[in-house]
Length: 214
Image (cartoon, rainbow, N blue to C red; front, side):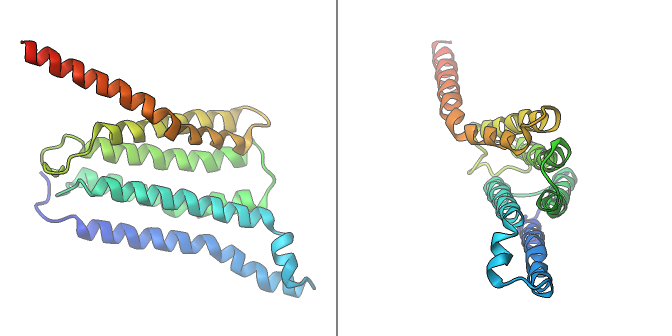
């Protein structure tokens, strides 16, 4: 039984937690400044000697920002919520809050299968949960706004991204030397989407044509 109320409270809570997670990403960089100063370094060395930490911060910022944008796109179609949607959303938030931890790991230690696997694995959990939320809302009469339903393109897009993330995780965690290069697979998502969209368009047209004949 869904709760007959606007989901704004759930969205606002989610936004607040995401903002905290993004803030946590930058705290290790802030701590670097007095450390470099105490070691006799200058302001330039804060940047030049810690490029890996800066890169991992920017990478995780982009990851969280993209998942947050995707979350908002899904909740534009939500008119109510039920306990299952709330639990999935909390698990999604858990993965968001955990992300600064593997970010700190990959910023501190050399890249290998373990560090890449734990980082890409966290992104995989996020992607699975986002797909689960989208799948739950899609076609759900109590949750989905009938005037603004989740499109098949949006559902296929999130499932496609999750599938690519699974492959990236397996490559990063199991294949020596691949490490974070596996994440380049995620760039294929916008390239593959037009192919899938054309396929679904043909299927819908075929179904419509068959129904008209009947």
